[in-house]
Picture 1: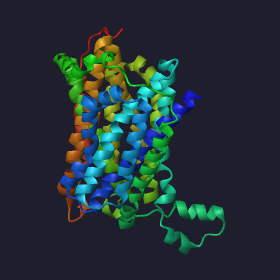
Picture 2: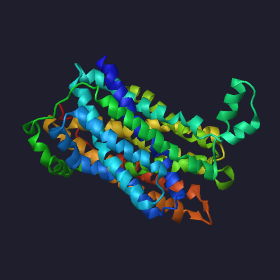
Picture 3: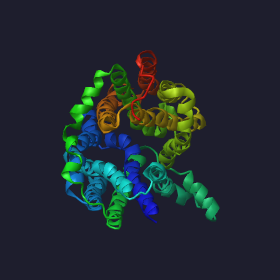
Picture 4: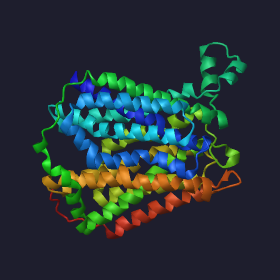
Length: 431
């Protein structure tokens, strides 16, 4: 029963994030925000991630029962993200997004803390429970096949019977300005999910705050983590992680817009109600890829697995650049997301756990988390709006091929750097 509760907690936790993230990159320009203003709004999440790693996560751990912190954060953060559906000017939009992210990001680690505190065998139980989060992200996408629909077109078609009605609805997605306006529903869905989780959190098992002496050394953990960069193989992997995080977030920044742009304008022409489900194919593939990660690592080793993960990005952006007029192929290539995530990011976490002594693992994981969720995302969200809307757009038409060659070549360069310069010790020190 407890595992079911924890899995449901993870499902709704990541459904919130998965509801608003994929379409925000096309929504912000439609509100008239400049690339600089868009960057500030998009960077609210990585800013919150950095603040959380250095301060708010530990503060919440020490001073609040975990389930009560979850309830408070999702109540206030839920009201903030819900409000964005009716906000169309920059200052309040940015402040509400920042408030939501500052409260939401710590709950990612707090939900993990609740899960670990109430498992009898965390090593074997956490994976299936955390999988609920991936499922939640996938489930966040599919209601929009019925939300982002051109209902006037459905009415005009006058379908007879449920089967015909369903077919017309699924093929009548919003496009253009109507899709941009309809994107406000992503914040309504995210807000409702957050408020539901706030209430549900009060039913979770009691998880008292940690005592201050349980992790006194964590206050300076980031300083200890920086010392790990004196090892060349750690420094190389950390810098490669920066590039891969940029490429990973460029995928989220540009894919939704690319899928929804008409074929005549160089895009794929996917109906608006199918953009998020198409992107969720990547999370479905992630589940399958994570299942075989252990076997792949054993067969091919750390470096080869990570290189394949990075080159998955290059292959996906190459498909975007050179085959945008093959929509079925573009949909199928989304499965590479599983390889990109599991074979690089997940492998990095496993590598850190294997290669560092027990007393240094938390610091090392934090070091790479700062890069993956913080610095790398900051770089991507600062550059991506400018690159798409200024550098590669002329007279209102985006040069998608030139745009996608940027992350493609970046991924190839990162893979080459890993091949040439990443030489970890043969013997792991983690055990």
